Length: 119
Image (cartoon, rainbow, N blue to C red; front, top):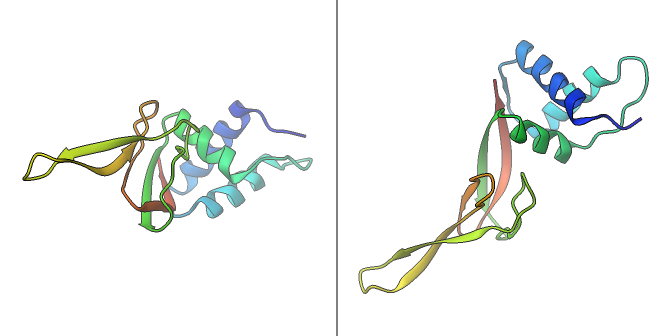
C-alpha cells in the first residue's frame, strides 16, 4: 500500500514529538516507516518523506560537501537559478544556486550531504 502525503506528515510529526532532532534522512526514513507500518507494509521512499517534510514546514538544515554541482532542487524538483555577485572589477561571478520556488540555497560546487530535521 502506498502512503498518502497526509499520513506521511502525521508520522513525521509523531516521530519529531519523541525525538526533537533527527540527524539524518536515513534515520527519519526508518522511524517514519516503522510508524506507518503498524498493521501492514507501507511503501514510501526517503526522498518522498524529505519532500513532504519540507512542503509542510518542518525545519530542515542541509549540510553540504564539495562535490558534483546540483542543478535540480532536492526538495521541490525545480531547476536551480544562479546567485551572482560582482567582483572588484565589476565582473559578475556565480557564487551559488537558489530555488525560486522553495528558497533552497547552496554554494557553488557543493552538493547536499546530510539533512537534519528539527521540530
